[in-house]
Image 1 (cartoon, helix red, strand yellow):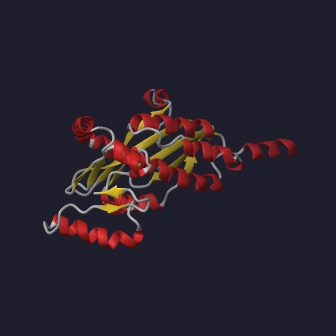
Image 2 (tube, rainbow, N blue to C red; image 1 turned 90 degrees about the vertical axis):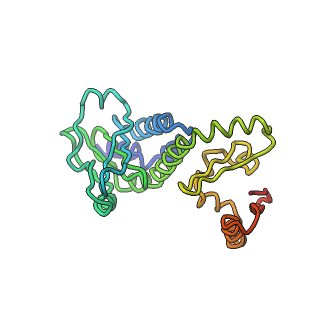
Image 3 (cartoon, rainbow, N blue to C red; image 1 turned 90 degrees about the horizontal axis):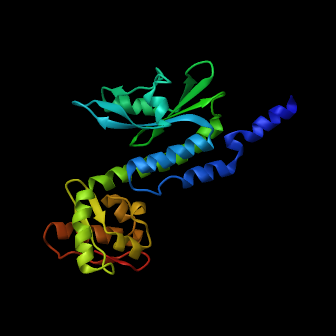
Length: 259
């Protein structure tokens, strides 16, 4: 009996360091949202011995309300056939931002679907919710704590995918421009109203990044500026917006020129 317990303890996810490392590596290799979720959820399901994984995206509704929409499920057949009903503790409608924030603070939530299956509802920060269903005992507190960091990476990658898709029109337009000026030149475009930035692949390569790593808003872009120069660069940028200066040209910490 003791040998069986020791074997079960060794097989628990929190005691397998490689499980979390490999799980983290499955996230972020694609910029298509659904392809990224497919790869990531497959990793969650296989590495954590789950039988179902569902991602909900939280979207604004009427007035000040929000709702959680099921956008991806692995394996899809479980969702399509209605094998499991949604847990009562899974909220999919919020009448206000305050209600949504309060619900997120209550996560993770663990419970039973039936006598054999356990569900786990976890937060995907600023994006949505992740629900995992496994057979048998619920995840330990340590496993849930380790998953918080991985879930943050999944959430940020999902946000970047959505922004990247929203910029697809700009990308197609600028890809043509990139072909004209050649891959040796990089460029970027900033939509100030939406705070969305398109950064060409060639410019990303010059800076030593993959396109999905940089992000698509000004706050992320500013991280490429040395902290000691940030105030000066921000001032030059604002003066350019005000029409007082031509486009500022500064350098990142690794001496790459931006602007």
